[in-house]
Image (tube, rainbow, N blue to C red; front, side):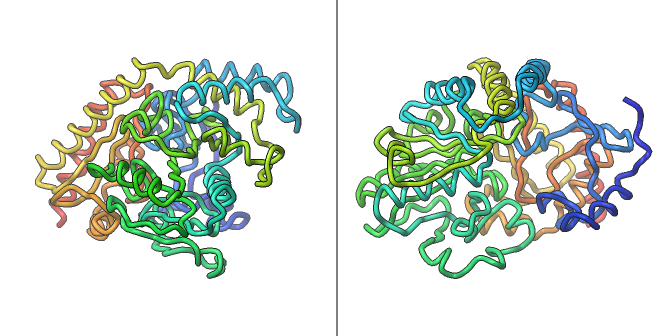
Length: 426
């Protein structure tokens, strides 16, 4: 591929004239870390190259969508084959059925599946279904969790909302969040019979990585059962990443509804919500709860998703977890060896970085880590050394099946150099 004559800076300048902030998703603008974003020209496996030809070891991996690495041959072939038959029809296709069957087979209790195009669509639709099925309005969310950008779920959001310091969002009417109750993560609330559902990230991954404490998910299940509310797992990040059956398999807690995304689209726009048959059959056209989407079940996306899932067997999950474990241990050792306080939590193939003296268990502790101001210099230091992590202190790292031991060694060495530089300038 010929090297582009454009630069990151020139593209960003042009982009800001035609797109708000020069980006199509806020965290990409580098506002919280400073500097100019790099524009990706291509990716392969564990690496991406920007338009100036610079190569980066990539731990963003489209925020978890690329679990097998970029441009995996099986995924490319599947998409090419599907594209030759047509890209969208507005009619059912066989691959929609195959993908729904695969998701349902992997997740006991997810009897029926409705495919959509984004995680936001999945969560907003699951909440609508919960409200319609229970006849109740109130929704419980947890501080620092992120469930997409629909109005009613933006209260107390993590991820980009946290990164930009936005407590909710302008343009969201008070009525839209009046039935949303925001509570601390890792604390089991006492629910009332007004609650339609509790929606939770079973492993919080939008305030950095915060695993559930002992008894938290079990307590939510019990409280929902006590008052007749539904439990919704937002597994847009954890679904089919932490295990074959997602977080429900890991923790042994089964929700009433699931929300999936990222991995199941193989890098293309696709998500889903799923649940018990008696609940899902309340959706139109069978029931009174409406939900629709012109591009839902897109042929290219379902082809990519099926290709990725075919590669994710038990051996793949073991390899992912081992890679994440080695990387986390290496990062922690490199930072502490340089005299930099750090916490590097791991949950399966996910890992986070907190500049904190003790483990982080909620959003308040996560915000304290971000407030140290160390992350921007840490992120840019790695970027200068050819290692790309997310441009926000509330994101996590996503090692993929394509990351090798050599990649990890190179990353840990870069972290050590950056940590020494940070300590030297404090």
